[in-house]
Length: 457
Image (tube, rainbow, N blue to C red):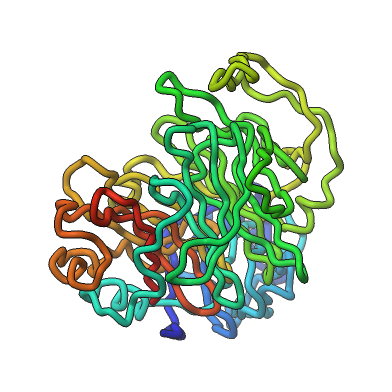
């Protein structure tokens, strides 16, 4: 289903200038002191080609007047400007229009710039309430894009992606080889024919595939850390590496172009190549960050030496003894460039966002698709939620429970999971591609076989 319904979200918060302005209408009038200028919102979200009226207040010291400024008459000749008019423009009366997907800053100031205020504006593609309605509906076999696919190892997939031609990509843990991640490529409803192996990269909660002509590049968390149970997580960096299927070769720690953000770890990437966006999420105890960059800026950042957090890796075989070390590598240091925007959520966050385990995210057309669900062996079982936010963290589509996995009998009948799996189905991966939302689920088939499934909305 293609989603075109417009949805607008504006938070009722303000930011203010702090300077003073003394204005007089003419030489015979009393001088009037203006203490501050306030926007109605510190973040504004609008759709492509949508026009909204921005509102501000002028505050005078000692005055109790609390009315909106008359932007049409504009008695103080306020000056409006946009940091990037190609994304959003603003006219002399404060009317804001969205022109392109992205984010910019709108500034309103007194003529001499002594008092000013700013608000961040995000323009998105208009995906809205219809998506929430679609996600809420019960299971229908027409939702299934790919079902019951067995991958290379008998482990659940961690994430997936979808090419322009419909080809599916999967990321899978190595099972009895916990140091490995498998990147696999195949047609829907078929086991993948080829793959490459990554060693000591991390957990692989999210990854993305970049299409460049005949070549494919994998964006993935890298330089992982070995935990006490032998599994890997806590990726220090993000790598962009050329997909080179080889069943006899492993790529260790990182490869290709590697990207670093100081003081950030547990990092995972998402990309929107059409709109030149790279988003990296990083998490520590109790919080999760999302940081947005121009993809082209990230790739153009020069290599420099960076020092990673202390990491442990190796020890799975005699040829690779375990090491614990603080390594210095060459990487693209994203700390050196300005992000387009960022936001942080707590766990759980506003409106119960991130109440359950983080299961992936995607970015497309100025929006971030956040996926969460309950992991295996926990209660309640088989529960998943999708929330859509803009790049400032404003909620555009409210947190919506996925209705399609509520009826276990229907899922068994459709061949999504087996009757002896106790209804196990776990959210794993999300992508917005070609105006369609894809969400992934891991299930158990007969004999505890692990299956990968992808639904499309």
